[in-house]
Structures are given as structure tokens and as C-alpha cells.
Image (cartoon, rainbow, N blue to C red; front, side, top):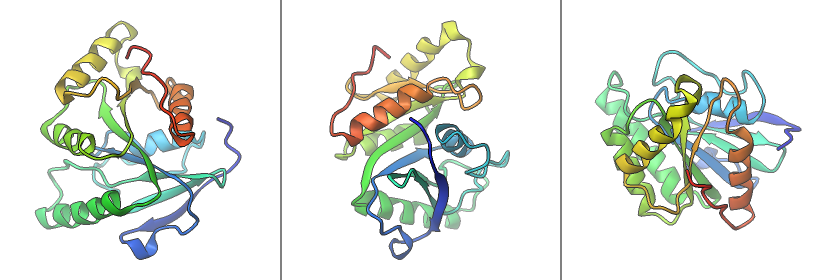
Length: 203
């Protein structure tokens, strides 16, 4: 996908702040430090569109990135960061769930899992929640450059098994460092926006 324009449109903590343009929303969900911001930068071919940090838990708002005046890439706060206070975790989870349950422009969720590791309990809980909703979603195995090419399919298979992933849900590998998986992920996104899902190509 050719990126003509990309910008951070708004950072929101509630419905009154959500964009009103009506563009479809592609949502990044996953653990803290799984690479959501890096994925947005890679998809948009921009180095610093979304702020990245070595410290997990830095994203504390729902950030909407407008792409080509056609859609939003939405960066959710990461889950599973133990150093975050219980009160803050509760506050984040409440406004995130409200967005996911009530966002009428939500078109697709990209559930990011670190390809190097099997899913953790909160990954499994998030995947189960997604499976029970009528929302298209894709598993994206991030940090693929840190796993040898010969082992990537085994890691994807372990993620599918760990999440008990339905066979129709795609699971892709992605590297924000090298751009591997970028074209395929955009193809999947375009397919969903067009009203049909591409087959999983055996992954």
C-alpha cells in the first residue's frame, strides 16, 4: 500500500474525544512492549509517527493515526505490564473495553504476539475475548527478525496452539525492523475493508 499521508490525529481517553470522520479503524492490541507502535511506524513507512519506548506501559491513551484520509490505525495501551498500578490497570481496561465494545467504526483488530515466546495467560484471555466477539481479527507474530527463518512456522504453530486459535483466523509473521510481512498484512487489511477475508496461506 502506498502511503500518501499519515499523522497522529488524536489521543483519546473517552468517546467524546474519538474522531468523527467515520473512517474504518484498524486496532493494535497486545502486551506492553510487543511492538504496537513500531508496527504502526512500519505499516506507514514512517520512522517516528508513533512514539516507541524501551519502557513498557508508556502508552496511556487510545491513539488514532489517520492514513491517506481513508482509515485509522489505532494504538491501544498495552496489557500485562506488572509495574503499572492496579488502579491504573483498572482505569485503562475500562476505557479500552468501552472502546472495543462500542466503537462502531472498528473494522479489524490486529492482536500482536511476540513471535519468540508462547502466549502468556493474558494473551490467551484477550484472544478468547476476541473469538467470542463478531469482530474480524488477525494474529501478528512480531519481532520475526529475532527468530531464524527455519523456526518461524514452528513458532506461529505454537502461538496458534497456545491460543486455541480458530482455523479461519490468519496468523502472520512480521518484522518492523526489516519490513517482512508488511505487504501481506496490508493485503489482509484491504481484504477485510473490502468485505472479505483472504485465506491464511497455510500459516
